[in-house]
Amino acid sequence: MKKKWLTAFSVLLTTLIIGAYFIAGSISNSDSTTKLDTIVYHVGEHTETVDYPPVVHIPNITDVYQQILAANNGKYPNVYLLPIYNGHLSSWDEEKAWIKTNFANIPIMLEAFASTGGDTAFQLSTDQITDIMANVQVKWIRIFEVVGWHAYEGVPFPEDYVTELLTFCKNNNLKVFWSEWSVWNVNENVEMIRDALSGFEDIVTFGFGTNSGDLEPEDGFKWLKNLTLTDHWGASVQAWWWDTHHNEAWTGEPQPPGLDNLLNMPASLMATHAQECRDMGGELIQFEPYWYFFNFTDGKARDSLKTMHETLNSD
Image 1 (cartoon, rainbow, N blue to C red):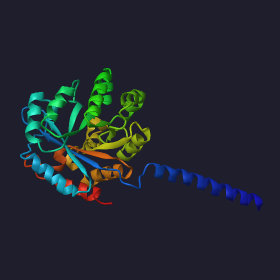
Image 2: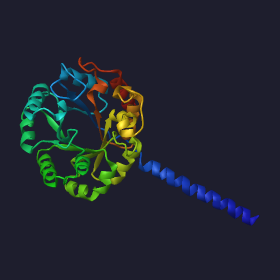
Image 3: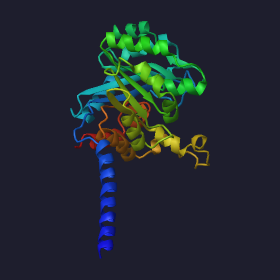
Image 4: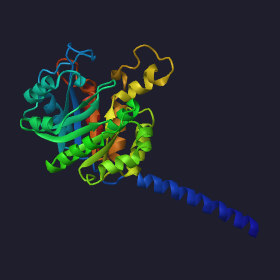
Protein backbone atom coordinates (compact mmCIF):
# COMPACT_ATOMS: atom_id res chain seq x y z
CA MET A 1 0.00 0.00 0.00
CA LYS A 2 2.80 2.36 0.93
CA LYS A 3 4.60 1.59 -2.36
CA LYS A 4 1.44 2.31 -4.36
CA TRP A 5 0.98 5.58 -2.43
CA LEU A 6 4.57 6.63 -3.11
CA THR A 7 4.20 5.76 -6.81
CA ALA A 8 0.99 7.78 -7.07
CA PHE A 9 2.62 10.71 -5.26
CA SER A 10 5.61 10.58 -7.60
CA VAL A 11 3.40 10.63 -10.70
CA LEU A 12 1.38 13.54 -9.29
CA LEU A 13 4.54 15.51 -8.45
CA THR A 14 5.99 14.93 -11.93
CA THR A 15 2.74 16.05 -13.51
CA LEU A 16 2.70 19.21 -11.43
CA ILE A 17 6.31 20.03 -12.34
CA ILE A 18 5.69 19.56 -16.08
CA GLY A 19 2.50 21.60 -15.84
CA ALA A 20 4.30 24.38 -14.02
CA TYR A 21 7.00 24.41 -16.70
CA PHE A 22 4.47 24.93 -19.50
CA ILE A 23 2.54 27.51 -17.53
CA ALA A 24 5.76 29.44 -16.87
CA GLY A 25 6.65 29.26 -20.57
CA SER A 26 3.21 30.51 -21.48
CA ILE A 27 3.43 33.39 -19.03
CA SER A 28 6.90 34.40 -20.21
CA ASN A 29 5.70 34.66 -23.80
CA SER A 30 2.46 36.49 -23.15
CA ASP A 31 1.76 39.93 -21.78
CA SER A 32 -1.27 40.89 -19.73
CA THR A 33 -0.79 44.55 -20.68
CA THR A 34 -0.79 45.55 -24.33
CA LYS A 35 2.44 47.34 -25.20
CA LEU A 36 1.68 47.82 -28.88
CA ASP A 37 1.60 51.55 -29.59
CA THR A 38 2.94 51.92 -33.13
CA ILE A 39 1.38 50.78 -36.42
CA VAL A 40 3.19 51.26 -39.74
CA TYR A 41 1.81 50.57 -43.22
CA HIS A 42 3.99 50.12 -46.29
CA VAL A 43 2.92 52.38 -49.17
CA GLY A 44 4.51 51.47 -52.47
CA GLU A 45 4.10 53.04 -55.89
CA HIS A 46 5.13 50.81 -58.80
CA THR A 47 5.27 52.45 -62.22
CA GLU A 48 5.67 50.66 -65.53
CA THR A 49 9.20 52.04 -65.94
CA VAL A 50 10.78 49.24 -63.91
CA ASP A 51 10.30 45.49 -63.90
CA TYR A 52 8.81 45.31 -60.43
CA PRO A 53 5.28 43.90 -60.67
CA PRO A 54 2.50 44.51 -59.98
CA VAL A 55 1.87 48.01 -61.32
CA VAL A 56 0.52 50.04 -58.39
CA HIS A 57 -0.68 53.64 -58.52
CA ILE A 58 -1.85 55.65 -55.52
CA PRO A 59 -3.85 58.70 -56.64
CA ASN A 60 -4.01 60.33 -53.20
CA ILE A 61 -1.72 59.14 -50.41
CA THR A 62 -3.29 61.49 -47.88
CA ASP A 63 -6.62 59.75 -48.51
CA VAL A 64 -4.95 56.36 -47.98
CA TYR A 65 -3.56 57.58 -44.67
CA GLN A 66 -6.98 58.84 -43.60
CA GLN A 67 -8.52 55.44 -44.36
CA ILE A 68 -5.89 53.78 -42.15
CA LEU A 69 -6.54 56.28 -39.35
CA ALA A 70 -10.26 55.61 -39.61
CA ALA A 71 -9.70 51.85 -39.39
CA ASN A 72 -7.42 52.33 -36.38
CA ASN A 73 -10.13 54.51 -34.78
CA GLY A 74 -7.72 55.94 -32.22
CA LYS A 75 -6.78 52.53 -30.79
CA TYR A 76 -3.01 52.91 -31.22
CA PRO A 77 -1.48 56.36 -30.78
CA ASN A 78 1.23 56.24 -33.45
CA VAL A 79 0.26 55.46 -37.04
CA TYR A 80 2.88 55.98 -39.75
CA LEU A 81 3.47 55.18 -43.41
CA LEU A 82 6.52 53.51 -44.94
CA PRO A 83 7.04 54.96 -48.45
CA ILE A 84 8.88 52.89 -51.07
CA TYR A 85 9.01 53.87 -54.73
CA ASN A 86 9.50 51.21 -57.42
CA GLY A 87 11.11 48.86 -54.91
CA HIS A 88 14.05 51.30 -54.70
CA LEU A 89 14.95 50.44 -58.31
CA SER A 90 14.52 53.97 -59.65
CA SER A 91 17.05 56.72 -59.02
CA TRP A 92 17.14 58.23 -55.54
CA ASP A 93 16.32 61.66 -57.02
CA GLU A 94 13.10 60.23 -58.45
CA GLU A 95 12.15 58.45 -55.22
CA LYS A 96 13.04 61.50 -53.14
CA ALA A 97 10.82 63.74 -55.27
CA TRP A 98 7.90 61.29 -54.88
CA ILE A 99 8.32 61.20 -51.10
CA LYS A 100 8.59 64.97 -50.72
CA THR A 101 5.59 65.58 -52.96
CA ASN A 102 3.25 63.04 -51.40
CA PHE A 103 4.20 62.78 -47.71
CA ALA A 104 4.77 66.40 -46.69
CA ASN A 105 1.98 66.28 -44.10
CA ILE A 106 2.20 62.61 -43.12
CA PRO A 107 4.50 61.13 -40.44
CA ILE A 108 6.66 58.39 -41.92
CA MET A 109 9.13 55.60 -41.32
CA LEU A 110 11.92 56.14 -43.85
CA GLU A 111 13.75 53.12 -45.19
CA ALA A 112 17.53 53.54 -44.93
CA PHE A 113 18.67 50.06 -45.96
CA ALA A 114 17.05 47.24 -47.92
CA SER A 115 17.85 44.58 -50.46
CA THR A 116 16.59 45.35 -53.96
CA GLY A 117 16.19 41.69 -54.79
CA GLY A 118 19.65 40.91 -56.11
CA ASP A 119 23.31 41.44 -55.39
CA THR A 120 22.82 45.16 -54.78
CA ALA A 121 21.19 47.00 -51.90
CA PHE A 122 19.47 50.32 -51.30
CA GLN A 123 21.36 52.40 -48.76
CA LEU A 124 20.79 56.00 -47.71
CA SER A 125 23.46 58.24 -46.27
CA THR A 126 22.76 60.45 -43.27
CA ASP A 127 22.91 63.47 -45.61
CA GLN A 128 20.15 61.96 -47.76
CA ILE A 129 18.04 61.33 -44.66
CA THR A 130 18.61 64.93 -43.52
CA ASP A 131 17.42 66.13 -46.92
CA ILE A 132 14.11 64.26 -46.53
CA MET A 133 13.72 65.48 -42.94
CA ALA A 134 13.75 69.07 -44.17
CA ASN A 135 10.38 68.51 -45.88
CA VAL A 136 8.79 65.44 -44.29
CA GLN A 137 8.00 64.34 -40.71
CA VAL A 138 10.43 61.45 -40.37
CA LYS A 139 9.70 59.66 -37.08
CA TRP A 140 11.40 56.31 -37.66
CA ILE A 141 14.16 54.82 -39.79
CA ARG A 142 13.89 51.25 -41.06
CA ILE A 143 16.90 48.94 -41.45
CA PHE A 144 15.53 46.01 -43.41
CA GLU A 145 17.19 42.59 -43.45
CA VAL A 146 20.73 43.97 -43.39
CA VAL A 147 22.19 40.91 -41.64
CA GLY A 148 20.38 38.43 -43.88
CA TRP A 149 21.35 40.20 -47.10
CA HIS A 150 25.04 40.57 -46.27
CA ALA A 151 25.29 36.97 -45.05
CA TYR A 152 23.49 35.67 -48.15
CA GLU A 153 25.69 37.69 -50.50
CA GLY A 154 28.84 36.75 -48.55
CA VAL A 155 29.95 40.35 -48.04
CA PRO A 156 31.08 41.90 -44.74
CA PHE A 157 28.47 43.39 -42.44
CA PRO A 158 28.64 47.23 -42.76
CA GLU A 159 29.51 47.89 -39.13
CA ASP A 160 30.72 51.46 -39.69
CA TYR A 161 27.62 52.39 -41.68
CA VAL A 162 25.23 50.95 -39.08
CA THR A 163 27.06 52.72 -36.24
CA GLU A 164 26.99 56.03 -38.13
CA LEU A 165 23.29 55.58 -38.88
CA LEU A 166 22.32 54.68 -35.31
CA THR A 167 24.39 57.56 -33.92
CA PHE A 168 22.67 59.95 -36.33
CA CYS A 169 19.25 58.66 -35.28
CA LYS A 170 20.03 59.01 -31.58
CA ASN A 171 21.32 62.55 -32.07
CA ASN A 172 18.25 63.52 -34.07
CA ASN A 173 15.60 61.91 -31.86
CA LEU A 174 14.71 59.27 -34.43
CA LYS A 175 13.62 55.75 -33.56
CA VAL A 176 14.85 52.73 -35.53
CA PHE A 177 13.02 49.61 -36.67
CA TRP A 178 15.54 46.88 -37.54
CA SER A 179 13.81 43.86 -39.06
CA GLU A 180 15.23 40.46 -40.04
CA TRP A 181 13.60 37.31 -41.41
CA SER A 182 16.51 34.85 -41.28
CA VAL A 183 16.59 33.19 -37.88
CA TRP A 184 19.68 31.19 -38.86
CA ASN A 185 21.68 34.27 -39.92
CA VAL A 186 20.72 36.21 -36.81
CA ASN A 187 21.67 33.29 -34.56
CA GLU A 188 24.99 32.90 -36.35
CA ASN A 189 25.77 36.61 -35.96
CA VAL A 190 24.02 37.42 -32.70
CA GLU A 191 27.11 38.74 -30.90
CA MET A 192 27.98 40.97 -33.86
CA ILE A 193 24.41 42.33 -33.73
CA ARG A 194 24.64 42.92 -29.99
CA ASP A 195 27.88 44.84 -30.51
CA ALA A 196 26.26 46.98 -33.21
CA LEU A 197 23.29 47.73 -30.94
CA SER A 198 25.38 48.52 -27.87
CA GLY A 199 24.45 51.97 -26.62
CA PHE A 200 21.41 52.16 -28.88
CA GLU A 201 19.14 49.59 -27.21
CA ASP A 202 16.72 52.33 -26.15
CA ILE A 203 16.03 53.67 -29.65
CA VAL A 204 15.97 50.41 -31.65
CA THR A 205 12.98 48.10 -31.96
CA PHE A 206 14.13 44.76 -33.35
CA GLY A 207 11.60 42.94 -35.48
CA PHE A 208 10.89 39.46 -36.84
CA GLY A 209 9.69 39.32 -40.45
CA THR A 210 6.87 36.83 -40.97
CA ASN A 211 8.04 36.21 -44.54
CA SER A 212 10.56 33.90 -42.88
CA GLY A 213 10.47 30.25 -43.77
CA ASP A 214 12.58 29.42 -40.70
CA LEU A 215 9.87 29.76 -38.06
CA GLU A 216 6.13 30.29 -38.06
CA PRO A 217 5.15 33.78 -36.81
CA GLU A 218 4.23 32.81 -33.25
CA ASP A 219 7.44 30.84 -32.80
CA GLY A 220 9.44 33.63 -34.43
CA PHE A 221 8.04 36.16 -31.99
CA LYS A 222 8.93 33.92 -29.04
CA TRP A 223 12.44 33.43 -30.41
CA LEU A 224 12.99 37.16 -30.89
CA LYS A 225 11.50 38.13 -27.55
CA ASN A 226 13.77 35.69 -25.74
CA LEU A 227 16.88 37.01 -27.56
CA THR A 228 16.43 40.38 -25.76
CA LEU A 229 18.60 42.19 -28.31
CA THR A 230 17.14 45.60 -27.41
CA ASP A 231 14.70 47.16 -24.98
CA HIS A 232 11.92 46.87 -27.56
CA TRP A 233 10.69 44.30 -30.09
CA GLY A 234 8.06 44.06 -32.77
CA ALA A 235 7.26 42.52 -36.14
CA SER A 236 7.06 43.02 -39.85
CA VAL A 237 3.77 41.22 -40.50
CA GLN A 238 3.65 40.41 -44.18
CA ALA A 239 1.38 38.83 -46.74
CA TRP A 240 4.65 37.51 -48.16
CA TRP A 241 4.16 34.70 -45.60
CA TRP A 242 1.73 33.28 -48.15
CA ASP A 243 4.32 33.36 -50.93
CA THR A 244 6.91 31.68 -48.71
CA HIS A 245 4.48 28.81 -48.09
CA HIS A 246 2.88 28.50 -51.54
CA ASN A 247 5.57 29.37 -54.10
CA GLU A 248 7.44 26.29 -55.28
CA ALA A 249 10.61 28.39 -55.57
CA TRP A 250 10.61 28.43 -51.76
CA THR A 251 8.74 25.23 -50.89
CA GLY A 252 10.65 23.02 -53.33
CA GLU A 253 7.38 21.27 -54.18
CA PRO A 254 4.91 21.75 -57.06
CA GLN A 255 2.11 24.19 -56.26
CA PRO A 256 -1.19 24.93 -58.06
CA PRO A 257 -0.72 27.79 -60.57
CA GLY A 258 -1.54 31.15 -59.06
CA LEU A 259 -1.89 29.88 -55.50
CA ASP A 260 1.09 31.99 -54.40
CA ASN A 261 -0.76 35.24 -55.22
CA LEU A 262 -0.61 37.24 -52.00
CA LEU A 263 -4.27 38.19 -52.25
CA ASN A 264 -5.13 34.52 -51.65
CA MET A 265 -3.91 34.83 -48.06
CA PRO A 266 -6.97 35.01 -45.78
CA ALA A 267 -7.09 38.37 -44.03
CA SER A 268 -8.07 36.58 -40.82
CA LEU A 269 -4.78 34.63 -40.93
CA MET A 270 -2.66 37.75 -41.32
CA ALA A 271 -4.67 39.38 -38.55
CA THR A 272 -3.94 36.37 -36.34
CA HIS A 273 -0.20 36.86 -36.92
CA ALA A 274 -0.51 40.49 -35.85
CA GLN A 275 -2.62 39.59 -32.83
CA GLU A 276 -0.03 37.03 -31.71
CA CYS A 277 2.66 39.71 -31.80
CA ARG A 278 0.49 42.15 -29.87
CA ASP A 279 -0.51 39.62 -27.23
CA MET A 280 3.11 38.61 -26.59
CA GLY A 281 4.08 42.21 -25.90
CA GLY A 282 5.27 43.47 -29.28
CA GLU A 283 5.44 47.27 -29.34
CA LEU A 284 5.46 47.92 -33.11
CA ILE A 285 3.84 46.17 -36.06
CA GLN A 286 4.71 47.10 -39.63
CA PHE A 287 2.48 45.74 -42.42
CA GLU A 288 3.20 44.99 -46.07
CA PRO A 289 2.64 45.08 -48.94
CA TYR A 290 0.41 48.05 -49.67
CA TRP A 291 -1.64 46.25 -52.32
CA TYR A 292 -2.78 43.58 -49.86
CA PHE A 293 -4.74 46.28 -48.03
CA PHE A 294 -5.60 48.62 -50.93
CA ASN A 295 -6.62 48.20 -54.56
CA PHE A 296 -3.89 48.42 -57.17
CA THR A 297 -4.77 51.74 -58.78
CA ASP A 298 -7.67 53.59 -57.11
CA GLY A 299 -6.39 53.92 -53.53
CA LYS A 300 -9.51 52.31 -52.03
CA ALA A 301 -9.15 49.96 -49.08
CA ARG A 302 -9.79 46.25 -49.44
CA ASP A 303 -11.77 44.34 -46.82
CA SER A 304 -8.45 43.12 -45.39
CA LEU A 305 -7.83 46.53 -43.78
CA LYS A 306 -11.15 46.32 -41.96
CA THR A 307 -10.48 42.71 -40.91
CA MET A 308 -7.04 43.59 -39.58
CA HIS A 309 -8.32 46.36 -37.35
CA GLU A 310 -11.43 44.54 -36.20
CA THR A 311 -8.95 42.05 -34.75
CA LEU A 312 -6.26 44.44 -33.52
CA ASN A 313 -8.72 46.96 -32.10
CA SER A 314 -10.37 44.30 -29.95
CA ASP A 315 -9.10 43.74 -26.42
